[in-house]
Image 1 (cartoon, rainbow, N blue to C red):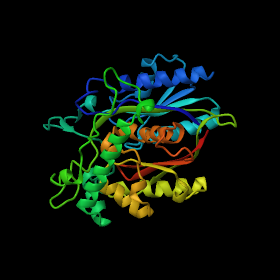
Image 2 (cartoon, helix red, strand yellow):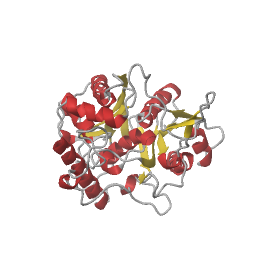
Image 3 (cartoon, rainbow, N blue to C red):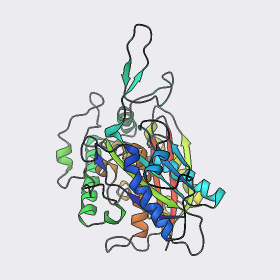
Length: 374
């Protein structure tokens, strides 16, 4: 059962959270969730955090110690690229089932402070900087995510206008949710930063339509219908279930592999498997949170799932809120917790089932199905 969920505001890389490294960004979230557990008489038996681009080592352990938790609380860092935060919560569920102890899990990313990476010198060849580690072997295919998303949109016949309209709707929904205070209770301010930095109130499809394609000539993916590069942290407290426990029951988790050349489709089989394990269909799901890496990619996944895109991210998604890679999967679960467990006049108070899904570079997908127990 997920009994508490919290995240930082999401900042644009190089801006509001630019001077805060990954461990320092995650620490206050871990400390607050540990305090929430303590109030209920619980102590975390472990911390599990997803992270992609940190300094290496065990970022989760550094964050745990920075949070002031006891030295005897172990910590594990998970790297499944964009799916790391959601995968970490899946690992936490397994640990809770095995041990009976609460686990705090989520993800963190500080793109702003990600270290520069260099290939070692080779003979007379000097060190060569690279932006990311390989997602897949070159002989199989290791496309950049933006180019892969552009190709996926083309394969599914998703046009430029459709992508821009979807991205604009994400911004409009996020701005409305932010303005209505719907994000307040899930947010832990970081110094003076109290709100997500990326949502725009005046974003329209017409404005987005003026932006050029960025990944290939004649393409449809632009900076406007793609997610940003962002900083942020998110985590949840997972405890053993019981009749008297209020929260989100984790009904099923799923991880899958797909063709690395079409990584954006990965959430589709992951969602299908998670729904099958939970004994549900998409028609049963009240709140759908999919990681909006690219509008064209999400629209292609919706087509493959026969899912109305208007059902996705009802309060705005990563196109508007931002995509802090290692944290994004956990952000989806925090968003589900808010929409299913934190009532408001504009939310469906009877909503019961939630779905989170994310596609992963290298050709993977991760999904989770939850049920609100009030």
